[in-house]
Amino acid sequence: MTTATAESAATLAPQAYKSDYKPIWCPGCGDYSVLSAFTKAFATLGLRPEELVVVSGIGCSSRIPAYLTSYGFHGVHGRALAAATGLKLARPDLTVVVAGGDGDGYSIGGNHFLHACRRNVDMTYVVMDNHVYGMTKGQPSPTTEPDWVSKLSPAGTGVRVFHPLVIALAAGANFIARAFSGDPNGLAAILAEAIRAPGFSFVEVLSPCVTYRPEQRGWKQEVRPAPVGPTDDPARAARRILTDDGFNLGVLYRGNRKPYQPPVGKGTAGVADLEKGFEL
Ligand SMILES: Cc1ncc(C[n+]2csc(CCOP(=O)(O)OP(=O)(O)O)c2C)c(N)n1
Ligand code: SF4
Figure 1 (cartoon, rainbow, N blue to C red):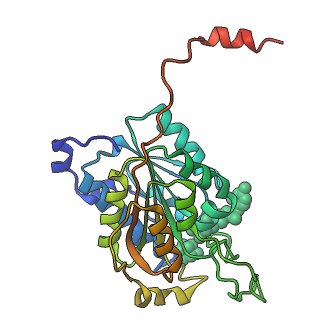
Figure 2: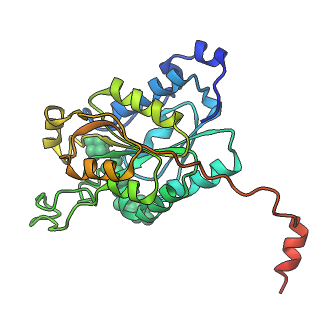
Figure 3: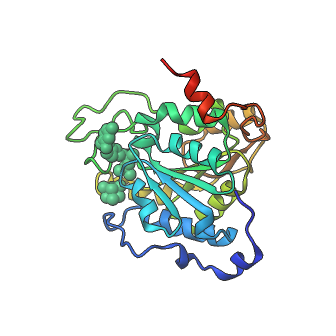
């Protein structure tokens, strides 16, 4: 993240990060609380909207940049991390937060997810996981339970779920957390920690889709704080993440990898030289 000034920390309230656009999410959608938590985290960190970019893909959850006063980029499906990586490398002075859904990030964007973890560019990736494609009316996603029956999957998918946290760990993410939209203060605190942490931070947010997965309203009875604090030992983190039931909340892994920095001082060619080199 960029370094906040004392003046910015003192002057901005969470409301200052909310744009005039009224969200069009269904009443009760978990994404409302994620939006509030974003604004609380930005205020806590004293980031000014002009120091901040929120990049998203496509989906209900990916609408979030429109509802914020920071810079935003509502891109194409599954490509938010690619756009954000280029942006952060070109403008290291900006704080970059990427947001989207499980369909966007783990299905069409799965490959970018792996390589963003591996590259460890300094940014924060927030996935609002509702185990379904909400925007396109309820198709199963990579995190949908194999036996979930719907009009579009009458016999379930029968396919093992994608495990985003352990995959992020194996691929090299430097900070890994799970949060719940029904606990906006806890979520805001985790988001602030994730943004502060150097390198690629990944926050999986359980965010119910009340329209296509109404049973997810029951998540509030399932979630609990993780019984132990974060570790910097990947093997221990992997064991914990693989053996929990998916409802332990908190920072689960905090690594020590140095964020990626592009090599400097190696390129000597100007644009004219490059054009010449590519001449047919
Ligand atoms: C290239 C491409 N393929 C498919 C779509 C259709 N599409 C739009 S959103 C979406 C899935 C959204 O699901 P998710 O990312 O989980 O977000 P949610 O709506 O649940 O927040 C799909 C398949 C698209 N817009 N672009
Ligand atoms: S369809 Fe689901 S994810 Fe989309 S706005 Fe409605 S409740 Fe939220």
